[in-house]
Image (cartoon, rainbow, N blue to C red; front, side, top):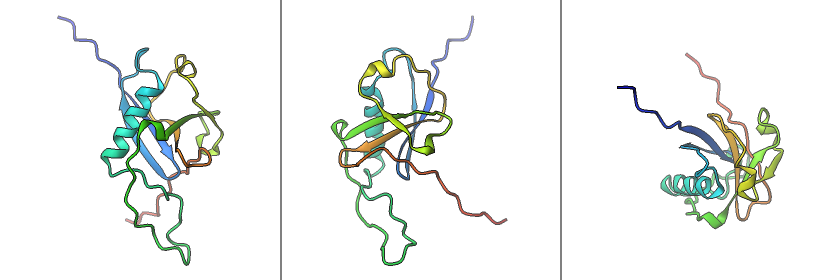
Length: 137
């Protein structure tokens, strides 16, 4: 008996400023739409304590205390998505907003492709590259 066909899972990175949500999705013609992406993203945000609105402060800067705010629960209406103009350089922050599902239907996503998102009050789409401190062994 031949093995059952496996449904491919794609892991996408949804980013806003320093926040990253890596979400596994089964992408096919039915699920390649904004509703699927935004529903998965809002579920991930809300199940991990909500979205931190002030996410771009450097706590090491003098005079700025680290924010102690709770995360905000988000809904689908609060989230807008954007795709990088250059998939190989998403940290250059050149994005085009996803305005309808037609923009998504011919795309092929690879694991760890970036999709930027913004909260309703954000001015634009912006992500920051993760920085890891020097590790000493």
